[in-house]
Image (cartoon, rainbow, N blue to C red; front, side, top):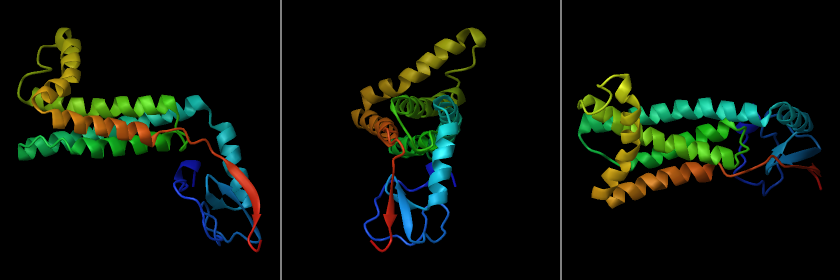
Length: 200
């Protein structure tokens, strides 16, 4: 299990019995990694992994995983609208969560301003390109060759705003999805404390 797979969203309030990372009994002492109880071996492994995992490596991994999640979000949004005929903006919130969690995992659960910006951009891009696929299906975009590709992309990115002019609520919901991806990736540097004594 890697640092990003630990559950860092809660703090232990009772004496733990097993390591949150490897599941083995803690013995007489344990450490806390962002509130999750870990054994001495896992504490050493976490510190070693983070020392070897550079900011650039985390960003590249977050970019790849985030693009994958954004592509999936685009297909889900497009597929739902194409099949039902409904443009359900609430899916944007799910896309924000999906992309946000993927980017956060790619950052080894560290987050930070660069990852927040990446998650927000990929979330908006995912939503915009779902409109782009619908437009391409209707023959509006991506049919004029390479010369018109860049203008088409710019037009696609503006589509949520034009749609929002007709439905302010839809634009607000898209904004919530983008904000959710941003918040998920707030900075959470790994903090290890201890040792603590089970009986103490």
